[in-house]
Length: 238
Image (tube, rainbow, N blue to C red; front, side):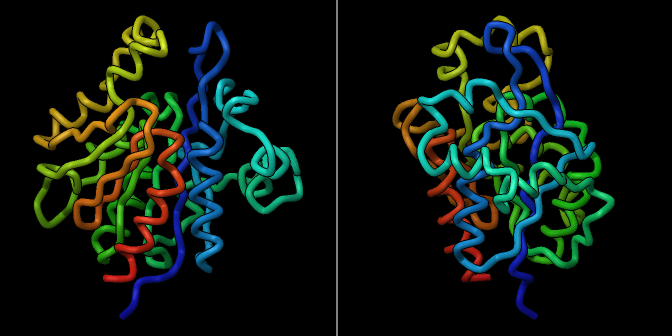
């Protein structure tokens, strides 16, 4: 039986000071670009956060990162993407059997709530168990330790190769001190925990993604679109 052409696009519900006191939350393009790719391919997409709340990452809506049609689409409260953001679903509203892809968008805030987001974990586990995909971008791998394959008792990413925003990028952004105070694993820490191989992009800001079976991951905001496109290519083979 073919997998449903529907995507759960997970979003962080955490909000915390990061950028010189400005908040981190959802990195908008990491949700928006995959949303557009999936919708263009004819997939239904539902945005879900653990609590139904969301906030934008302040840096992600600055002109260097959000501009042109992306900015117009985000600021248009009647656009499909913005409407789904503003009417964010909670995990209890999702029937996992109706979805074939779980995609974790990010923002630094994902490091704070994805590790304990039991509702999102269950959705991802259900989709994986029925043969679907569990995929991430940037800080999204923070969700992997909680997504346990019932067949192995280990994370769906255990022993695999994945990418995400690495320690070098955090240090170049000058965020290390604040993030250390959060006392949560960073992306490369998650890879070590899962006996996985962390694959860095050629440079922290370069678009890059990794495909390892039904786990597809992207490094950073610049990778969000190509990661979604790679996900669709794998999906065709399932």
